Amino acid sequence: NAGVMQNPRHLVRRRGQEARLRCSPMKGHSHVYWYRQLPEEGLKFMVYLQKENIIDESGMPKERFSAEFPKEGPSILRIQQVVRGDSAAYFCASSPPVRGISGANVLTFGAGSRLTVL
Amino acid sequence: DAKTTQPPSMDCAEGRAANLPCNHSTISGNEYVYWYRQIHSQGPQYIIHGLKNNETNEMASLIITEDRKSSTLILPHATLRDTAVYYCIPISYGNKLVFGAGTILRVKS
Image (cartoon, rainbow over all chains, first blue to last red; front, side):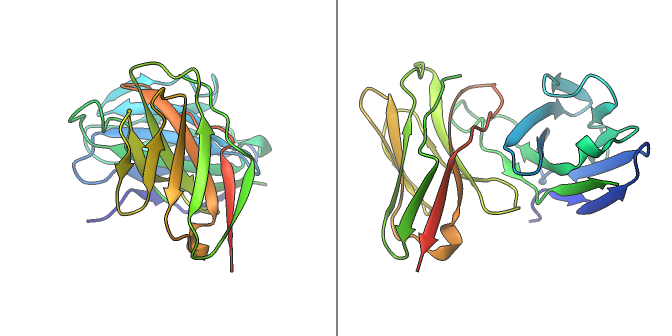
């Protein structure tokens, strides 16, 4: 029973290139969350998606960042025209369809994708 | 969501209980208290959650005061692998997890 799989684990890009980070949720999980952790800083929420829908993107930068969770395949976090300030660890988490109020916020996180922008 | 106050750091001797406090005096009636931790460079890990009753699982125990304004996470026999940042997060149904600064727990041999 694989956990949340993120790839690539490490990605190096030059300024101006595009970065694509993939997240495969746990089997049976239909909710995906993306968080960003800048060096020496805390975890910041970016976006919450269900299959084919963006539920909450309040933490996404207004430009260059986009996320999707298609009906088939992994969730993708896309960063266009990367800048050095995008260098960070990007964590994906998933949760199952809500079975009750109590467990609604039990998220399983992946190991993260570390983006370095040269 | 309620604001939280956690000590920035704590030390604990290996094998002893680690008691991590969290103040959430503005918690509302429909907010659960969740605890997560992040071991260095890894993804956060869910530990335990509760509403008003004390809870225990294989990882930890959670003690919530009767007025729900504070809680304590207890790791009964801390090991070196428990060294991590611990986050206390009051949250209501449907809201997103918001991580604060947490408490850095250092378990020392």
